[in-house]
Image 1 (cartoon, rainbow over the protein chains, first blue to last red):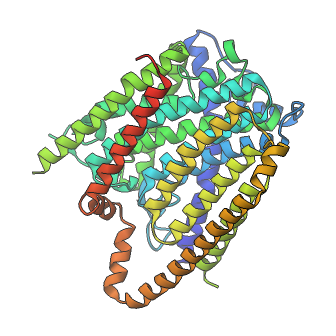
Image 2: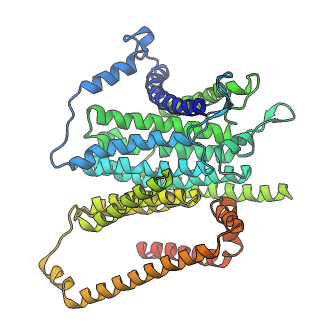
Length: 341
Length: 178
């Protein structure tokens, strides 16, 4: 019993550290890939092939002066980045990233590679995603700056609008799987059709997957939907007035949100830790590979597509994406009822 | 003291303090935030009551959607501090409003005492394996969905029509020339 408990605590620590490191890896990957897309070298001076660049960035931010604009609400000004980072970290707590394991026989009974096994896990992810908007809105309001406020307002309206499509895409997966637990959803995707086509939900839910990815990009405020920080119009949007580690926390939150969203997409649509060749205890390698592919797609989209116009964003969200998501959900429900008979 | 009891008192204390502060201080934006804190503590209480679905729905709908709207309005009106002009103060401190407030407060107190008394009586009447099973089923999403679309189907449909009417009304009011 104690060994399992220690393993659980260690798992929490490992997940926390891995999320921190994933932000560093993402910063490096983003800069290197961006350079590749633009035929540049990217960072190459700090460490071999510039690998130490993210750590140099963090050190630089640590030593910068913490500035606070005159007339800013100091308590909320410092609370906002904390809310953003906390929400980003806590969402990952319910995301499973591997099957049960005994750590190569070290433990008497297997533990799940997941911090908290909740039977309404998907809804928890959704709830925490809807809380992360407060970090951005409070940052914009408390800065007492027009650019920050406009960025925050845009961000809030954008996140509310795309949350609907996001939720409906999740709901269509729930209908197919018949469960709210992410672990059960992943287990429902085991096996294959005709021995070649894996039973991943992306095969039965292609529309749901596309809607999910688009809404997820909008939810995490990434290009081509990065309106809260559109440089040309808003300087830097909601984090215009932030410097030093408070800025770093927003940065961290953005990358961790991307990782979480990709992890959820991997679990819901790409079969999670299920894959050929590897034994079940090493399933997390498959999970990491699939998640990395989605994250590469994220960066790829950012450096390929130009930013939308704000009215186009709203039109697209409400008049195209939302109807598609609703129709997809209805069609999925009808299909499930038809085939269940 | 068992862990559940400690958590109950922590969440309860957070909720009471946050709710008191919502009306106890003048900054509107802090009121909104404290109300969110109170909702979060309420969600914690739901989890302790083995109703995780209700807890998550509480966060998604109240803390996630409705309070964002409140925050939006507060930010757009840009009212950092509540204004208290003299005439408004005098109007609300007259005898009429105070008496009304006292009557409403008394009514709430009576209701609370009655419901607490009734609940404890009900619990005593229902001690047994069957009722425990039924209570557990309350926490499962499948069970809630089943009850919602069979026993409470009519109420569910009426509520959805009500929300639809409200939406149509809002669109009509906002867009005068359609």
